[in-house]
Length: 203
Image (cartoon, rainbow, N blue to C red; front, side, top):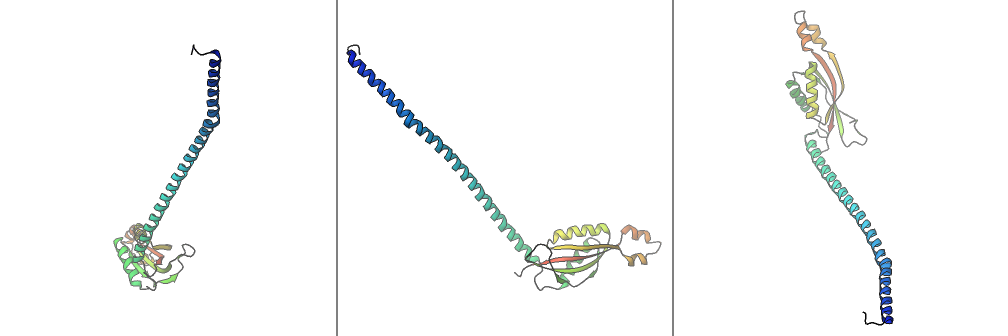
């Protein structure tokens, strides 16, 4: 380096300065722009990953809902196998159900009227028809409350409507002073109501 002439050293220095300047220009013009592009691509990639995660979550929720719907359909089909069928008007089955449930709860079925077709009264365009059965039962208030809870849980396609409660006049009129206290203690009542029974589709 010391042996180089001043002219050569100046030229070499200019070449070095030019190279450094060119590298600086290339860095700011190319590499800086590339970094901006890379940063923008990174943001787009994050956004795409978020959309992908959301899509996968929606697909999983949809699959879960479809599975739940299929399970509900199976339960409905199972329930329909136990429901009354169109054209089935034999009140003996109703009487057997009521008698069995009332007996276990110390109640008596006093009257049951033959079923008649009625409106389901649940939702518009409801896919089931319904039958109405008028029933009169005798017994104590607490016993009937227990019967009602057990009955509606056991038969979700049957609901009680228009419940009326009165003292059992026949028992009260037949009571003597000696047994009046026992009548009051047992709270012998007359429960009059309608059963609205949904009728399943023909399977």
